[in-house]
Image (cartoon, rainbow over all chains, first blue to last red; front, side, top):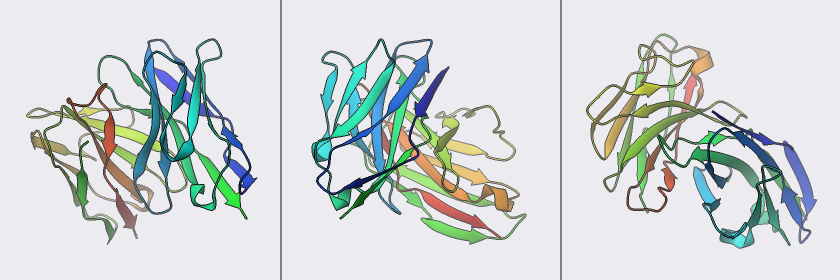
Length: 114
Length: 116
């Protein structure tokens, strides 16, 4: 079984400032790691994913995440946020084999202020 | 990528009734899932919809309450039975495409259900 912990339920930040959304996971098997974004009243959109290889993963909209195996973390970062980045962000994991269903963290609400 | 549509997009229902949500994918997919997102919360997996056989339910979810069908590789339904206000949630369908590596999971727009 897997579990995902998002350490911050809300992150307020000013426009053009950098941001980091934290995610830690635990699993007894090898996993894939994902970040999804959910804009208000919209569905889930994949931001980025870690499969293997380079631990720094680049995604859409200028986001990137770094996989740290020793700390079992997958933190999401953006060097300069925009108002339009205001949304709910979910970290998720899935098994590398088997059913592939996602286990989600509780979510982090990013609020970008002007 | 796979494009997923859901019907209805939202509904308001009376306690004790049932609602069936449809999920249609524009291409054949290997796996389909149903998730629930309760107000202000994260997503919880309800079940894996298996083509031609009974769905596989997660702990806390039962077939009598959430019957699921998947008659083919592109379509699935979720029924929320004998609804109560606690069932008010967004229900999301997702699918894993066998052509994407390593099986990226796509989500539908969700069905927003309110039970009065």
